[in-house]
Length: 527
Image (cartoon, rainbow, N blue to C red):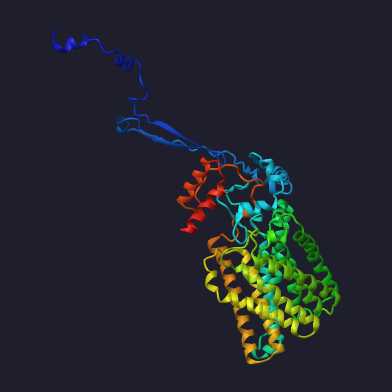
């Protein structure tokens, strides 16, 4: 028997038998198999991508044909309705859902926010959860109730401090009006068209910002309420009304020579209502007493009295301007002493210099102008206030190097009008004491104020157009009512590995997170 015949009688192993008995479809055929890759996306619907490829080298045989599979059309896209913003919406998103249903668009819902989001935030939580001179930076150990991984709606990111732009430009309109009409600066030959241009820009900008913030009040009332409860932001609620006072003071002669007296009562009524609320809290013994919440932005709540007195006296009124001047002067002295003392209970004053300190110059500058208008001359009382403002201005100017390295903020616009107010007082003083020195000083202060406003305008445009971060997510309004009990520490900007070690050590000992961070900072300062 030959070897070939002998191999036929050999028994095949069971595995080979199983393979031979079960035919593999398409293994020896040139038909390509299709592998489907499914990619599902909850936001964009189901999509299918087909890839055709030969399963074996035999598929590359001559004459083999390959057919690509058609891509199916994506299913209808349903937008996801994020209910995490409902705690700040006036109607909790119901109106938006009804409008979408009328348009035939079905909104998918996400889990509702916790009930804690709908509760009022006590004032001490702003100090515990936020830091910085404007209390707008979230501490590393805190959490917010709004999503951090996405950009919030524009209205939620639009702060009340945006009215600071109107303060800066409105005061510039008054300054250029004084430069063009004051006898002390007649040698400059300033055209009144500059005042007209700036006044029109300020009026248009004020109207636009007021409309946007009114929409925020309508659709996101809780966000506005939290800004009002914020120890720093509450002072910016005076800004819209002070801006209107600036517009009345800086109105060009070509538009109106005189203004009706009842306009002054209309503009001062909301300021009086805000003062009754805030000054009452300062005198109370609660969490909002002045020794607890005092910060340089409180000058905005005081300076409105002097601006109102200045406008009222310009209209020929007597008793009303004196009343507001007296109220403003009483609270300014208390605020000035409180800020100078730097009480241990105060947590909002920054350790380093910050542009917010220029608000110290605002009140005495405007007070000198108001008293001069009430008395009819730049007398001794006006000069005392002016010299105080001039000294404070000089004490900040000689430390200009300490104002570098701060992150740009919209609130900086509110810090430009004190420079302009000092320039206005200098113009008025040069009219009373006319000499070469007072005229040069007035021109220099006007130039510095104009350059500061121009620089801020350029920065604002750059951040809005180039960087696109003019209105970032407003962490100041998204803090929780209660402090987080326990969270894993994640490294933020400004933290170090030593802070992490301290955190883990204090967690093992059952101590507080803030205690670990304070301990770390104190150790670093001692070194």
